[in-house]
Length: 345
Ligand code: FAD
Image (cartoon, rainbow, N blue to C red; front, side, top):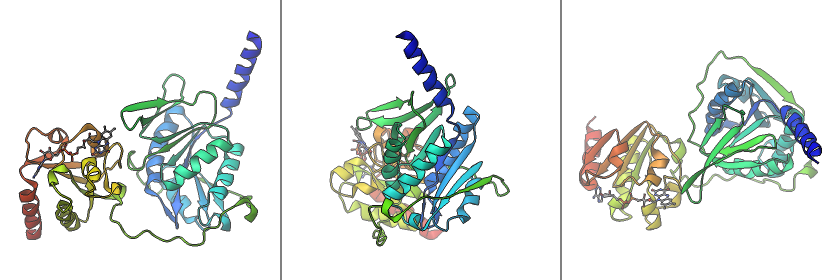
């Protein structure tokens, strides 16, 4: 019996050894690479170097060949380019089929996708098709120095614990990663790589849905993950109308408005604005926290901002521990004074 188990185990090990390289699904929408794909290339590079394999990007769409070179300049050694009129608009069936067929054929060791609406839809279906596991919504990825497995960390139980997950017996190791958490890869203009165009076997009958039209949501000004400036408000605002003031400051700085959970729970602002463990993870150049105490769950979502400015009337508020600049005072005095000063420059 032991011998049978050992034989199975040896076979499994041999099977797993066929899987090579780190793949990043380079999500594009209407011919534009999503910022998270550039972040994943930055992270993928570190993982590929730690294992000693190549970093590959998978680019699907129609007439998107112009983006392949960009992916190489952002660090991909190879780009798998699959184009077809039926891939022009994202469909679950079409993208799942093409990506899982490619994984079956090429056998990557690791596959990473952004935890965007598309990534969250696509990754579990692909994982099921290729018979592997998936860690969704990761905030940290590392290679175990001993056995070279991918350690995938994500918040669990509403952010109360951080769980590190491994995929011991199946390949590829698949993860989706929260946008805005990882550092973007740097572009190197003259970088060379290989573009592998593969033929896409896709029939209309493979796709059960038809995308008739893509209607852009009404501009909500909450592209928090991409914003360079965020002016965030907390319970210290005292009322929903306080956000009108913050919006004025955000407008002056070309930024957007963020919020703590307390204000979202109070119904002062939509959840789309929430920053933190159960909201968005952001990394702007400037984060201005107004009337936010700095609870650990809020800090988890904004601590990687380049410059943090805190305005709080309590000098002992924990937010000052992560702030680069702190202003102790009433936000209803400080924010208008800041706007006046900005008008003068
Ligand atoms: P408070 O903690 O009440 O702070 C208000 C601050 O405003 C105080 O520091 C006060 O001194 C200051 N203030 C008052 N008046 C003024 C004024 N006029 N001018 C200047 N300063 C003033 N929170 C999040 O934000 N994001 C999350 O994603 C999140 N996820 C969570 C997940 C879990 C599982 C749990 C348990 C909690 C989570 N929370 C989250 C909630 C978090 O613990 C805090 O309760 C919340 O962040 C507090 O929000 P706040 O800082 O706006 O309010």
